Image 1 (cartoon, rainbow, N blue to C red):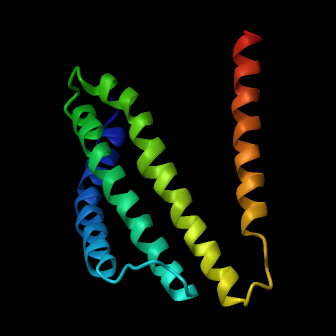
Image 2: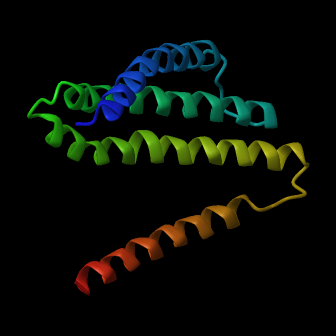
Length: 142
């Protein structure tokens, strides 16, 4: 492993600690005010809480593979390979929900002038399906 890679991993691991503490703090302080969102502000706060919750959980998981990589442990590959399952729920899942909340807040803030939320959800979901199908076609073409 190059020394630059080693330094970058060390910096990333060091930055994971404040990310975890600060993300947990946001979830703790703002999560207490969560209720069934109705207003733009409530939707925005809900998005913030779930966005930082996703960040906290995602960074908690990735602390282990990157630590294993730094110490060149044999478990590194298995941990990195398992990361996709955690990404689905923590990074993408909670990130999508947080984005939905922020877009809903924007829609309500603008008094429903921009009714793009459902169209954006459908378009982005279809784009994801088509991208996955494209990848399958490329894989089969090998």
